[in-house]
Length: 302
Image (cartoon, rainbow, N blue to C red):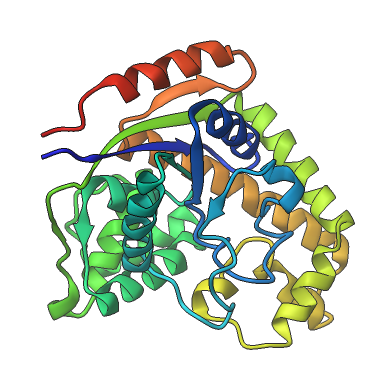
């Protein structure tokens, strides 16, 4: 059976995925599907680093601004939307390109995990909740639930998976793997960690200059879903709005949480996905293009 070919571009926040994805889409006649779980929300623009109309350079972008911030969004929703979009994009002779940093969304897509809607939403909520804790606290929680577990305390992602599994209602614990619908090429962007962290720090400063505080204030006046309210760049404002923190401390917390998230992203991608890595500072674009051409020439069959 012929399978759809998907080009997937991943990497930590602020690494430069957007700029490269536009160039690749222009070169290979592609359309872009956002793989970021927060860019689906209307009004969450600055804090999620959402691409602007001018930055798209005419390349169609999908899965952006499709929900109100009061609505929840799950892994199952993502899989369903991507399946529909891939068929639509291919029907026009274009290459579907997924760009994003939400690791478990990408893994579920590649591995073909299948959940019912309620299970997916609960798993999503629990995963996001645990990702907000320090690793030491997570491991303490796991020890209380399972003192004999064999998970290494430094294996953060496995600790989180075990916590989610052990705190799910019994009838909702199991997701199963169906036959994968896609042949994928996962293109990962990375570079020296100090460079990534400096990019993040500068990006956060630009977000505040662009009006992040006003954006968050407007959003918090309305009802936010549990998914949206946990987004980095938004949740850090709560103490400030209560008069318990300064704006400078908010900036520092957003920077720190973004750096921590980037570290977790890289760890997850390296441990969970089969990635073709490229250093954004040193890799020649021609080499990346050559590898993509080779992938596109392979047969999309079992």
